Length: 357
Ligand code: MN
Ligand code: MN
Image 1 (cartoon, rainbow, N blue to C red):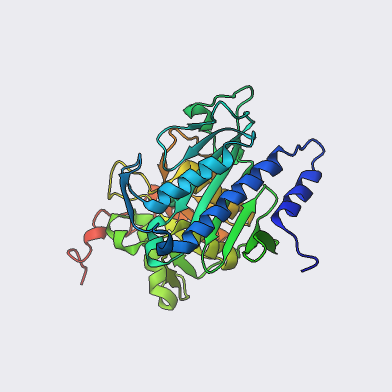
Image 2: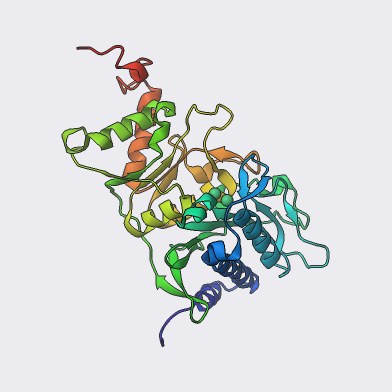
């Protein structure tokens, strides 16, 4: 259709706005979006490609890999390593940074990614996605090691995800708002369909895995209890709950119509202060959310301010509509000061035993 803007046209238009920009960044985004198209095609074949189910292996984080995890990781590495734009890559599926093979030139960018997010959802035909974050290699570094990737989210040059749902979409930010493209499968191009994704400041929808309620910290228990109390409680309005168990799908819903997503810190596994990975899940999603006018926090601090200490570090994630995230941060603050009785009481979790009536 005349007048339609392709992803390539959009990126080149952005590049022209900056006098010193080179074609490197454009070329990098071209390769990233090709990787996403390749994964979309694979995911779309499902059982026909014998690609569903477990691979029988574990990744560095002790998680069962699905066949799609392994294949999507190989696609991301292969599609992005040859072009000369990258100095190195980090993947959820690899313990150490992936060096650019010697036969290819090195560039100045670092690519960090979760090749397939929510991969177990693919077996039941529910949306999955890919998440990516682009950093600049430190000056003069052509062979990046782990510490070169440990940059706070505020240093990201670009972040985005692809969602493989009823349609395949690519949603990106280059630091000037958030734009969404829909894959036109007939011509094989991503077409600009969501030119300015904005998150409403208030929300009446929240997403959290309530089966972990007993492990949550009091500020999160308080927030959710108030949502559940609805019109008759402290909030004075009713809420709806959502839980897709796929970060990409949750964030996408929030970018389209607002809401709140939480994977908070809990006491279920003392070794994991959160579930989601900072560098290639929380940071890119935080940049998208903030660029769309939302807020992304651990409850105690802004996600993009966290100085990373390890490649696969996990963090608590609370993101979405600005006023809801700010409210939960306030609850954490009040809890720290002991102002949120009865939620500050150690007896809160056993209140049925200590019932006052
Ligand atoms: Mn993931
Ligand atoms: Mn994954």
